[in-house]
Image (cartoon, rainbow, N blue to C red; front, side, top):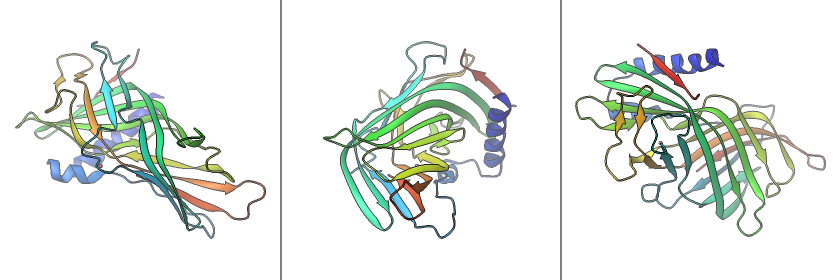
Length: 256
């Protein structure tokens, strides 16, 4: 477990070390998921869009008012989103799909770059989208070590981000009754972008680095979504398909 998490963190810092340390440069490092290549694939595309990701926060981080990270959570700030599914050249819309997201903070890693402190937050959890009216599952996901990078700039004291909330650990997708005829065969990836990151009360996010591990003020951010997986037809269907999804010195601490 620790070996894999160290590799994630080491790769992250190797990536950041080769980039100029400024908000504009680091904001462009988001990794968007894409479907893996399979023999004679039929391209697909699925995702959700929000009318304005800058208005309503999709995510809420809550430190529960304690110093420990053991009870820190990341949950959904919006109950419904508009989801669009594209597969085999067709498009299906799921307006007002219900959205649930529940994750816990399992590890915090901090490191330094010139003028900037980098915090790597790793989350374990799950999320799902369900069809409005029927409540049939569209997509379900479980994950470990989803990575969120926060940057604290020494000259301004502000906090920004380098990448979105991306899957670095194990990810398992499940297609539900709202998407009949296909089974997931692997290749699961996802990312939620980070937009309008701010404290719950507004303004920059406060970080108490005098605590071990550091304590993060409650914060929110808006988001869109992308992801990918490979699917195979269930009996009665006739082709393979690629399915994608769409909608911005090291110390480590672990949950105890």
